[in-house]
Length: 120
Image (tube, rainbow, N blue to C red; front, side, top):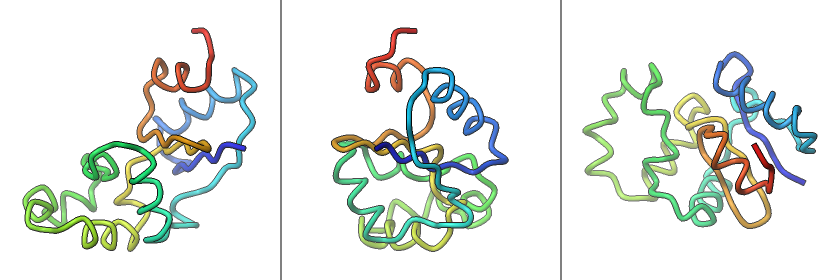
C-alpha cells in the first residue's frame, strides 16, 4: 500500500491527490501538519529515494525562508538536516508518495505515472 503524505491546504497536494483518485490508486493518506515525519522515517525515505537531501526541503515555504535555510543548509551535515526536517512538517517538501522501493517528493504527473505504471 502506498502512503501519500500531504498538506490538505496545498494546491499541489490537491492536484496529486486528484491524480491518484482519478487513476484509482489506493493509498493511505497522512496529513504532514498533524503527523510530522520522524527523523527515522525521513532518514529511511531519503535513503530509499536516491534524491539529494535538499529535495526533501520545502524551499518555497515561508518557514524555510524565514529561517534562512538556503544558506544555513550548506554548513549542516545530513544528520542535522534530517533532524531539522523532523521538527516541523511545513519544512518538508510535499506531497510525498512512498512505495515499497521508491519515494517521490513534489508532484510531477509524468514521473508519478511512470512509477505507478499509469498511461497519461
